[in-house]
Length: 292
Image (tube, rainbow, N blue to C red; front, side, top):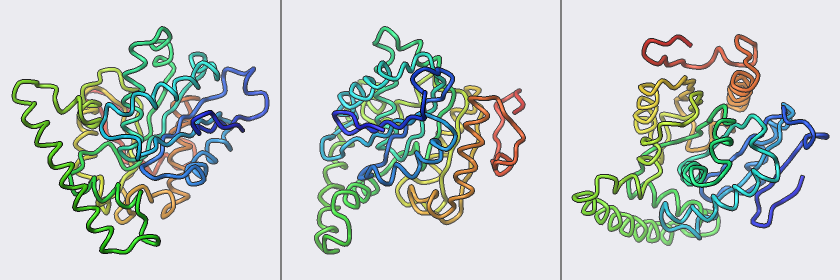
């Protein structure tokens, strides 16, 4: 295991550098995620003999969607080092912080020499608690929780901070709304949620892990995005839990969560179906005219 210069962490099984059949899994963390949390998710892929790259964009360095581009470039450096263009790749992204980094990286791949080759190697995409449109208050709540955790700051200070953040986001969104009068892509330029709706080349195999109890990224918004992917012909697997909080499904339902991810990995990378690892727990959504 080694850490990159900007704290991306790579784990690899023995002999992985000489074996291009070993899958490469990228895990992009939620706002405020620490690597020790992300490592718990990476461990389930490590046990499947995968290489993993873990990275969380530092929230205090990002003010808008465009701010993720520099971090995407840094993560891209791992592709060359790990010979990603020769390996099957899976992305596992958490919340909109992970989605925003993925979106910026996906755009970056359109502008680099080996981008087409890398995209062709991406076999699947796992969404945890995303993608979703978040209101100003939901965004403020997520950021305040990540940057001012309850054990450290009083409720009154955190509430005031949330109000200030919400006012900032509301002002920003008003500006985007005005911009949309003459720029039809205004929302896509400012939001990973709308930007990802524009992609015609997302991986066709997608797994959605989310909850009806999520107060930050609502299940209705996630299902709206999911529906757009079904129309494009994506092969969708999904589990919607009734009561797990935002990005907390793996802790509340560890066995079901792990089984779902492993079954998905085996399906998209190795073509395995119908095993006993949890695939039967998926809610399957079929693309028009296509059977899963």
